[in-house]
Image (cartoon, rainbow, N blue to C red; front, side, top):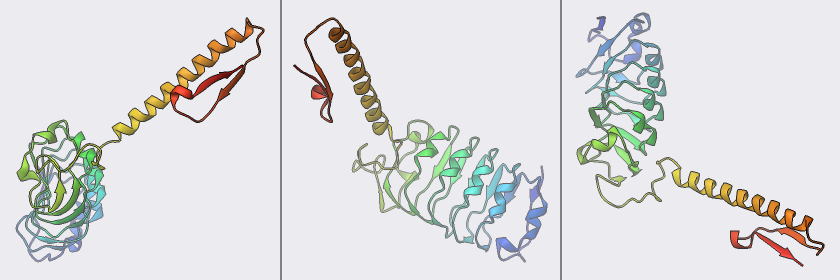
Length: 227
C-alpha cells in the first residue's frame, strides 16, 4: 500500500510538490507536525486516497470542496488546526467514509443537512468550532452521535445539545415542509379543474345561463357560480 511520508523540511503543505506526482496514493498521514498554509485544492485529484490525516498541525484557510471527489475515502482527520469557513456540503459525496473528524478548528456557519447521506460513519465530530444555527434533523447514521460530537460551538443549538430549535427554525434541513405545501397547491389545482369539468357538463345539459369564475382566494371560494 503506497504510503506518503514527508520530511520535516517541508514547512508548508503547498511546498510539498512531490504530492502532485504520487497519483496512486492511498494513505496520507502528516499528523502532529508543524505544517502551515492551506490544504491544496489538488488533494481532490488523488482518487485512490482512503486515509487522510492532517491532525494537529497549523493549517489555515478553508476545507476544499474538492475533497468531496475522494469517493473512496474511509477516514478524514483535519482536527486541531486553524481551518476557517463553512463545512463544505461536498463532503456528503464521501460515500464510503467511516471516520470524519474536523473538530477543534475555527469553522463557521451551519452544518450541511446533506451530511445525512453518509451511511457508514462510526466516528464523527465537529466539536470546538464556531458553528452556529440548528443541528439538522439527521435520521440515519448521524442521528446516533451524542452531545460530544457538537460540543463547544456556542451558536449551535438543537438536539442533542438542547431543545431550542424546532423543525420550522431549522434552516439547514431539507425543505420538506415546502414540498408538502407545493403538493397541497397541486391538489387544489386538481380539484378546481375537476370541479370545472363537472360544471361544464351541467351547463351543457341546462339552458340556464351560468358564469364560471376563478379568483385568488381560499380553496372554499376558489370556484363559484353566478346565475
